[in-house]
Length: 179
Image 1 (cartoon, rainbow, N blue to C red):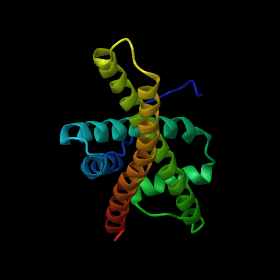
Image 2: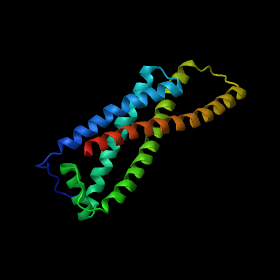
Image 3: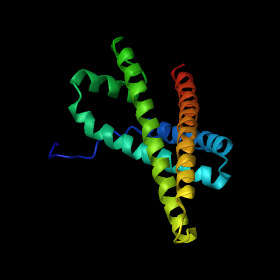
């Protein structure tokens, strides 16, 4: 970690605004998918979409700012050139961008899945403590375990579909931006 942290004299306002646009596009798309596939009400699906997108954005930017000083000079130059001028100097950068995009997509998918799981489990535990009577039968527990297992696979596919749709829309916007 460098000891001399400084505020940059050049601020990439375009990159920040585009990321804000991407989050504003992703939230309604993912909320709609959560509402239609998991049968959440609109308020709950919007809450989950906002939570997953904001948490994954914060974690993503944290990882970027931690890993950026470790990048080679050529990759840093390409990154700065893309952020400020929207083009690349080297043709080799395209393959690195595609690989990085796949890694980011699947990492975001896993992150969003775990965030939704944690939120669902924490909310279910608070509700279960209020509702549950002290003597629950073994049969009822096994039934709830089977239901959780089935809901987990449905949750994985739903999060994957929501993430795919939002990333597809972001890709379309980036294609329009480049022309």
